[in-house]
Image (tube, rainbow over all chains, first blue to last red; front, side, top):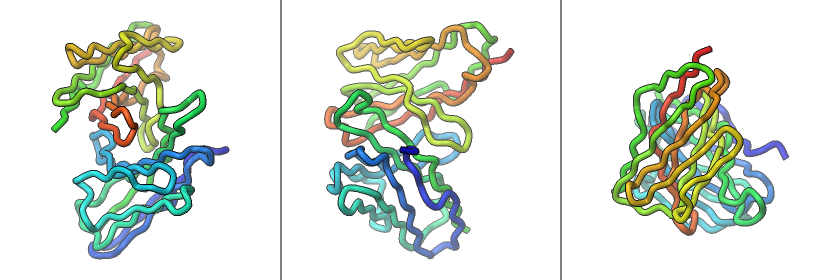
Amino acid sequence: DTGVSQNPRHKITKRGQNVTFRCDPISEHNRLYWYRQTLGQGPEFLTYFQNEAQLEKSRLLSDRFSAERPKGSFSTLEIQRTEQGDSAMYLCASSSSSGGSYNEQFFGPGTRLTVL
Amino acid sequence: SQKIEQNSEALNIQEGKTATLTCNYTNYSPAYLQWYRQDPGRGPVFLLLIRENEKEKRKERLKVTFDTTLKQSLFHITASQPADSATYLCALGAYNFNKFYFGSGTKLNVKP
């Protein structure tokens, strides 16, 4: 397994456009998290999936943001009607609820979004 | 709401010395606390986890302490090396692992 992958790595879009990011977690991991990180700040929690169920969603996540994890495998994060304030690095992390490294989050390389 | 404070100023130390980073928090009672390392342009990398009922955890040159009374965790890197230069993040976690709160990180510079 090569770890958590995210695509695309970079996305430049114009304000008002919709964007979708994909995250492929480590295959045996049942937990999946999305975070947003801006320069000089730590990752900010957006949402959490256990298998295919979205169990937690930040109040900071406006109705323009939606995430899915069909069949408990890969996940997508969609931002509708993007705003310049959405420019950030979007990070995905996965973890397992069992095994020797449980509770350890493995992060992907992130998708850097620039909204012009 | 919860608040997590890490030194915003960079920590500059000489190679071979011990680096100590601080994570303070308020308005929250985490079940556990994690430390991560982040290099520029990359996702964080997990280092250590310590539970609320543990006082200290060690892993090779790393040591973490957790004082739930002071609401503080200290992260130590002994015999620091230039390769340890990075930003270090602390994260607070809930019992059911449904969310994590990260600090803004402290940048460590280890000079040869």
